[in-house]
Length: 589
Ligand code: ADP
Ligand code: MG
Figure 1 (cartoon, protein in one colour):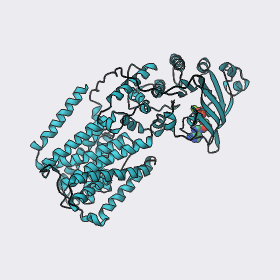
Figure 2: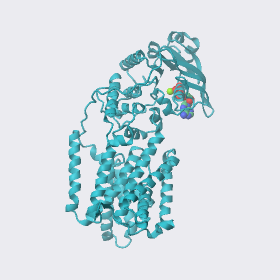
Figure 3: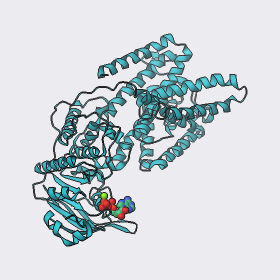
Figure 4: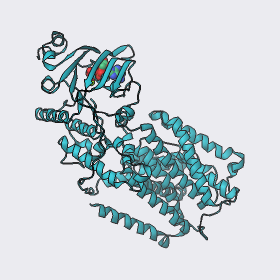
């Protein structure tokens, strides 16, 4: 399948949508309108939950804020629904921003629980604020007008609703394929990697959260002016759960899944309401919920990842072209060879009573490869985590390129020119090799939300793509850039991490056990690569266990044992040092 095929499919879908009101009954058109309105919320949730990993039960509250805001503007104050749109969107996004700032630092379940809490609280407000009609709601909301045309009939507003849905899908998919979108997709799986790439994870979460709220506000605006009447019911907590259900059914990571999920849940609910009274006369209200829940559980058993991803697996893959040469991304000025680049002074890090790093000091000069060795548990990874900002030291100072970074957050240290790999590989397995490496270019590029959604900065994107391909080729993984990272053997995943780190154009490369899991030939190639990087004036700090690898490669070695520095020196001196032989090398040397 090529890009052209995808475009043809999109055009065909648009034509079917455009013709639908001509062939469907008015009732079906109304049903389609509801599907479109719910889709907007579900697309936002797909972005927030499926892509960003933030489970929100509270989206219905955002729909409600916008619906009440526009009803207040238009029905109660006689102003234009378009003014209601502005007010509703601004109010919803404002509330979301405040809620986001307060809650988005919470982790996992706590964050989801907080969405339940404010979802309930805001839902409660709608029924209890004096000026908003309480439980009677607000009626006689005017229709939306385009010029002199009032969108009164369901077929008229249909085109507005589905036009917005199509536009949102188009912009959403563009966004996901942009710099910011890749950062959003990297959120799932933890902050450490994201921050180590110079990305402010909290900011990206906040942006995603506000986008989801924005889509909910569009939905609320359309809802209010289509039904012309609102009451608290459709914005309560159970509706919040229903939106989440739509997203899951459609496929949480898929924007199109939001539309499909909204359609399935809406149609299913509709038919359950139609057929259940035939089976069980009487208590159909309660039974409806039971029947619906049963269907949902069946669904979770049958296609847990959602309809769209399940089907997409059987479609032919879209063929993509290898990135073409493009103008290079900007590079940072590198420090002069031999200059003091990193100074660790009396670093100490405790975990409870355990002193994992104990008063360790060493220096790294520009252009050298320094190895940190020591037995398992000696504190090597902890040391690396401290100097990259993933952990804070309890005592001591760390200076990088003349600047104190001891208390700096990880993303600021990354931006200053420290790029790293992890002992426990941190990749995004469902992104391809090229995209994983492109994540590394984040702090060298600028494209923001709007440019990403409207594809305005394709030149920078081309440069980032080409840079990523060059780094893949540099480390020897250039032959299959569109392979999923999760399909690589572990050894190559480590190499992929190096390519990602290189794409950041670092001054200092920090590698935690890069050769673990590599075969002998692969190790030799890795050593070759590191030598070539040194020849390009890159400074490298490496933890490695393979003594042959270390001794033949590095300029100096720091030996850690039980958290303390045992000694440091050139490889030959370390090899013959008695304390080192006793503590670590044993018979190896
Ligand atoms: P190395 O990388 O040299 O094998 P580490 O730095 O991973 O050693 O670990 C040093 C010591 O700190 C070990 O005893 C380890 O169990 C402990 N440690 C490391 N990380 C943590 C943590 N997050 N919480 C508690 N203890 C930890
Ligand atoms: Mg380690």
